[in-house]
Length: 172
Image (cartoon, rainbow, N blue to C red):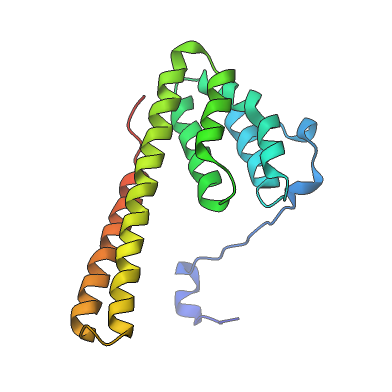
């Protein structure tokens, strides 16, 4: 632990973290608004080997959330989290299941969210593929380090820009 001088102690932030194991709670014990219930349900089970089965059980929460004024934004946030953490969850299959449980007037919004996430994933994959190509060219000696480093840095900036842009959600 670092001890700060007394002269700056009043200006130093002190943080404490509370860590809870949510896996011990049942669905019935998770209370609060719909977004909190859905989010905690996802976080509680995200690393479970049978997550896709649990996801099916969360569909009613997704449907309820989609009925809220800003529900589609929250829905997109939760789906982004799931798709970024779990490689074994098929976005197209999830989209089909969501469309079955949500109101008719929200189905187009789910399809729009799913399409945007698919497109972003394709673009990210293309950029990552280019980075790997430049790294291979550098490793094989076919390219100078300076040129490869510049191109890789440019592609990494492009990835960062995509990440920032995907964090801002348009109104649905």
